[in-house]
Structures are given as structure tokens and as C-alpha cells.
Length: 319
Image 1: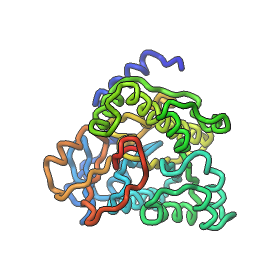
Image 2: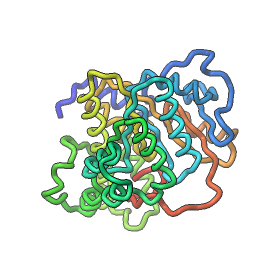
Image 3: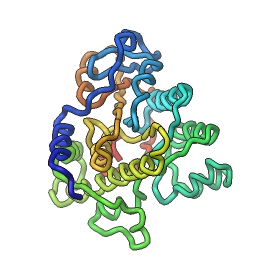
């Protein structure tokens, strides 16, 4: 890809921690009020606590809203549902993009949303994550009820697994590869390398590079899926809400930076989820400040659950 020097420089600023200009809020929007007993929303730029309605107003000018998640956090997933409902209730045309479904199941996902197959048939064919019923089914059912287009954005996991082992994707899977792939050893590489510390067998540089290539393959597939949707629907104003592990979107890296390489003028808003035992913890606030435009703190789950999905880093934030 022949990227103009100006774009390269702007991306460097993005990944270096400046992120993107935060959506502007009025003084009225930045009142110090809590959002709910289990979630606290903050403007990362100002530290102001927001109500959900104020957040929805701030997101209204976005082309893409990244809802970075911890995959197994109950209150965080409830909050994601509230954001989607809030945008719809505010009169916005919305599309949903999901890391949790893969490109090769887009057809059966469309069939289910349009009532052409049963839920049982849909789940049998779509490889839902282990926590689908609890955390993602409400979003899919809402999309079905409201006739919201939903993008199966991720690369098929069998392809990512092959790449992480040094093999090429099978010939019949080539159609699902993103047209462009980026594996720059930039700030995203640094974060990925740090996240892999302590995982068995990942201390060798060559193996680390394969895992990173697999991670980037997912980011490029998701970014391209969103970009293609925006291009195909340029005649309408739709806000794409993308659900992903927060590693894919924190600091404007991962999927975010790859979307901006494809569509530099896209207006994005990045949210990140942070579980905590104390919603008033100042250390949590300080740690979240540079990761996103808005942060939503969530209470820790009372009971541990099985991991939502296997991934190279075994992290709740990445996959």
C-alpha cells in the first residue's frame, strides 16, 4: 500500500499515545454524575464522569465506535448492550460489527437475522463463543428484532491458528484473507510482546513473530470488514459499533490504526473496559487515561467463568 508520508506521520502520533482528538462535550455533558451502580463512564480527556445519555450524545458524530471489552465481564457486556440501544433510541442508524463471529459465517448470520434459519441451525453453523448465550445473544437478538445489519468481522480462527504455527491458510480459505496485511514492529508490537511475557514457548523471537502475525491478521480482517461496509453504505449515515477485546483497540492501535490506514478520515471513538473492585479508584482512572476516548469501569465478576475463547495470549483483552 502506498501510504502518503503525512498519513504515516499521523499514524505514528496515534500509536505514540496522543490517540485521536476526543469527541467534544459541552460543560453540561461533563457533569459529575455516576452512570449506574455497576458501571462508571469517564471522559478520558477531562476525567469527567458521564451519564449514559451524555455518552450517547458524544458518540453521535462517530463513524465507528470501538467497544473494547474484557470478554467475560458481565456488567461490561450489559453496558455494551445499553450503548447500542442508546444509539438506536436516539434515532441513529446503527450497524454492529463483531470480533466474535468470523467472515465465513456471514451468510448464516444474515440468514438468522432475516428469519431464514432457526436459532439452533444458526448456532450449529456459526461457531459461537463459549459465552455466547450469556454475553452476545442479547445483542444478536436485538439486531434481529430491529433489523440491524451485523458484520461477522473476524478472520476464521482455523486460519489464524495456521498462521501462528508458520503455515499458510488453506487454499479454499484464501477468499477470507484481508487484501492488505500490516505487521509493523511498532507500538502495537511492543504491547503484544509485553503481553506474551510468561506464556510458555513464546520467548523465541521467531515464534513471537508468528503469533503477532496471527494477531495482526485478525486486526486487518476486522478493519477491512468495517471499511468495506462503510464504503458500501457511503450514501447513508450509519454508526458502526464494533465489539472486540480491548487489546485490539486500546491506544488507537490494532484494528483502529488499520481501519485508519484504509479510511484516514473516519471519525472513530474508542472505549475501553476496566474491571475494578472500586469504581472510585484513582489508580484505575490514571491507568485508563491514555488508552481511549472514554473508559467504562466495571465491577469484578463475583464468580470466575470459563474463558470465552482461546487465543494466543490467553488474555481477556485480546484474541
